[in-house]
Image 1 (spheres, rainbow, N blue to C red):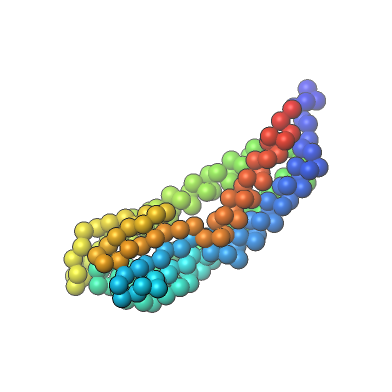
Image 2: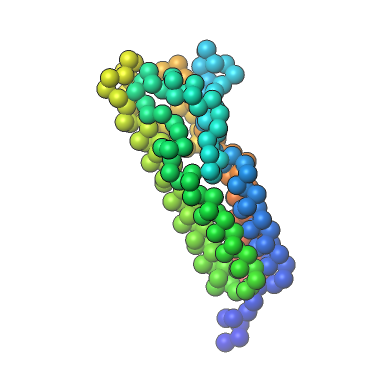
Length: 189
């Protein structure tokens, strides 16, 4: 019976604390980016997505998207940006509590919450990209077929090639998640 309540090792607890720190650090870096290339923009135009704001040449991209009838990219169109930082902060606090209590059952729950949160984020981004690419205004000056920009990879629309890539913040979050998995292997007995 004692084996079922075995605590995580101190080293595992330290890894979990580092994971929480990485989650917070990720908030200060872009999580995702779209880069648009065309003959008239060989240097590329960017939409850079942080967990709480958009940056890049958004006004230029919106001006160009107007010609195909696409909605504007704006923080108002992405309500997630108003609360995503708080969700990550809450997850970091849960991660710290997991390190303090050092129970595998709590770690399993934390990993489950992290996986569900990540999947919901990907689904939400996919839905937003779908809505932007398929709800084109019929009054647009240039008529194109509806399309869905990829979450990762490239897409061609008219003379624009779009590349979608993860930002440094996403890689930091992936690292934080891997640090949560290591204690499961390390303390597997």
